[in-house]
Image (spheres, helix red, strand yellow):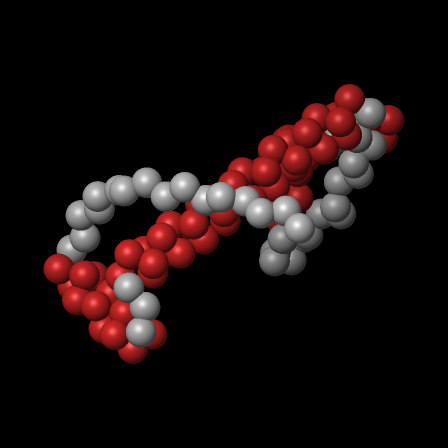
Length: 101
């Protein structure tokens, strides 16, 4: 069995009084310390943020790869198509292949 040691470090946070009061109510209801609730909230936020950043980076890498493979749509054609959506004269979706230009 592998055991990991987690080191915690103090951090001071300034909260609006309304938030602090709400946190106190949640703490009492959950029978947990305010510090543990704050730590959990910060950890959750940071993890979500990191996942979002990773998702965005992967999306950019995929787009660059597709462009390198010649798969792209002319910006003017894409904009014209988007502007036509919902009108009486909708344009066909532009092709994602450079060869079709």
